[in-house]
Length: 313
Image 1 (cartoon, rainbow, N blue to C red):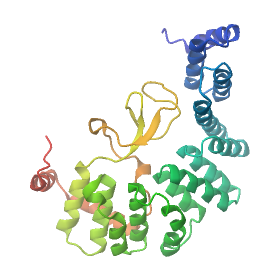
Image 2: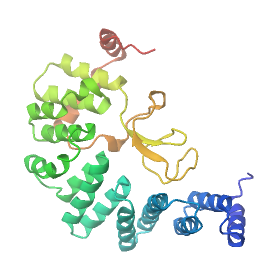
Image 3: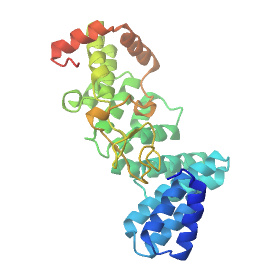
Image 4: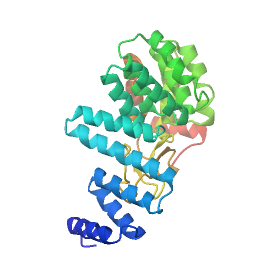
């Protein structure tokens, strides 16, 4: 309570040594270790919780993966490449659906010259939950391929979860990169009507631009994008706090392993993270879209929204 976390940690370790089966002591120690980035110690405490029956085996496996991933990130930040790669792969094996672990493991395999392993890791995670970072890692497997070859290679990924909004937007972006705007429109389907968010509407603006639509039409889509929901983000299940990036513990409430990739409550929406806009759209189209956004002033946005009956206070 006084903020002396070092002393609190020392006392918690002493209490844990005296009564390792005491659940409250386990929880306090685990929280302090996670806050102090003592991932190795936290994994030992987690193991004790499993041993003494205060944590179900499946929950232990998932949280151990989270801690292993955090340990891998810490090792990589210390420029210990091989150890970090091994821990990233370990985290992915413990919980294949943990998106950041899958991304880190895939990148480790790419560095080791094992592209098939990387593709397998990403595909397994994509089957559980499509995510832009997974698509980005999949693109890194063959960074210099042409847009048409990339579409062909990505079929192995996009055939899984084809109706997920992320899959539809990924396919649309890939076709925009190949300047195949009709297929991009088909890939997007009815997403802009059923689950419109800022990214889907921005993609639609790029499609319209590519097909030669007027500036008025393109601006209309961009205006809708500016006031649309931001789409899925990393949200704490415990306190609903939104994070720009995944973290093992919530920045707001300190809870361990509570971040989920989902649409936040509308009242909690914040700007899109850089990861949310997968950089697969052709640069020229991106530049034109940015110019179009810059040209829209507040009056135009209000006028366009008023036409749709979507004026916000």
